[in-house]
Image (cartoon, rainbow, N blue to C red):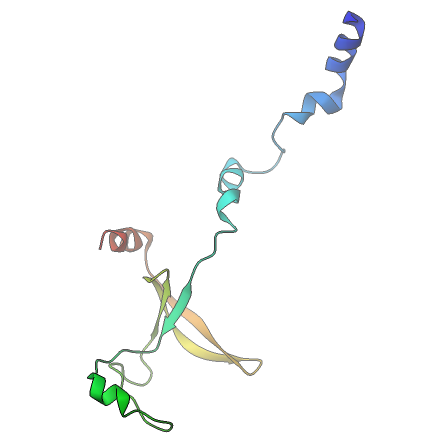
Length: 114
């Protein structure tokens, strides 16, 4: 029986079974588990405040004035935290956002404290 166990230990497939894949950086292996976490991405065109009475009077064709001027950058949020600014683009007849300014990692960390 000792011969069989020593043969099993010399099998290259079994020896390499516990080794980590070659060529894959350690950072990628340790972050793989977070890649499937869903995030909420939202893009804000602008904001306004209104009274409930004004809200109840809104109907089809009503115009709501926002706090931003035409041409100002949109704000891109992930999980309600500002991460970028951008501009509206149309791609294949769908709206999209071209990112023009990414918030620095330090500023993103600071916003987590708020």
